[in-house]
Amino acid sequence: MSVTDTVGPPAGPASAVSAGVQTAAPPTRRSRGLNAGQRRKLRTGLLFISPWIIGVLVFIIYPVVYSIALSFTRYSGMEAPTWVGIQNYVTAFTDPLVGKAASNTLFYAIIAVPLGLIISLVLAIAMNQNVREVAWYRTIFYAPSLIPAFAMSFIFIVFLNPQFGVFNRVLNLFGGANVNLLGDPTGVKIAIILMAQLGAGNAALIFLAGLRNIPKTIYEAARVDGASPLRQFFSITFPLLSPVLLFNLITGISGSLQVFTEAFIVTNGTGDPDNGALFYMMYLYKNAFGFAELGYASALAVILFLVGLALALLVYWLSRRFVNYDVEAG
Image (cartoon, rainbow, N blue to C red; front, side):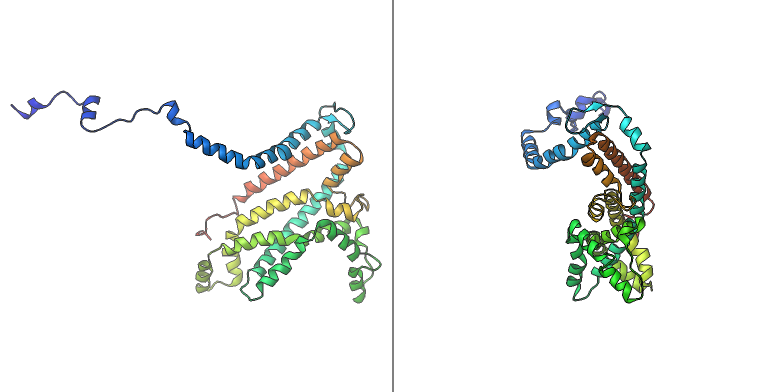
């Protein structure tokens, strides 16, 4: 008998199994779900994060949805809301005080955000120096950011007082005349911008964490190649610190759109002189709690939310040009 005579029919599924090749059974609906142990872990995890979930739903999601609903009504807080459609939004885009408040806020953001980033980055570089007293320097640089905004506002009122303030006393020593910054529409904005820089310590700590995360070997290799400190900053520090810069930029823009406390205290809630310190959030507050126009204030809040969201998306889109997440690329 030849070898070919002992060979059976062509190998099929049965012959494949007999040859040791086993095919996996298709997964059933039960095997694709969670088993008892996984479901128990899921319930435990949800139980532990339930305070956060409840907080987000109650203090974020619900107020946002309720504000959007109120923005289409006339509501004083003392009676049932009355549906007015998009009338509040039409009023907002034709209200001259909204334009004034928006321009003041834009002026503040254009100056305060870049200035804050520069100051906080300089502070972070200073706090990152390898000197023995660096711990004291970090405490001194960060301490002003711990002062509450309302307390710092009162300090600035006294500091800039046109009669006996320290600022004008210093000007007098150099032959200058007294200056009333808080009595000038542009000067009051400049004063509030300078006041905000005392809180640069928070962003400086974030920059410091980013600086300490950059490998020192990269700087050592750059020094061996003869790179100057300025070249090291623009070729190593700045590119590798760009993700942190993006974070501080987003938070800075968000904070600048919501500037309120300093302006409210410095101007005693009026936004004067000549509405020079009437920022968007202050006008929103005055409509909600001063004029009892909660529906109109809700429409202003929705507009602010959309503007902030648009700016954040724009910054994220532009960040693809300057943000570097690859250490080796630095």
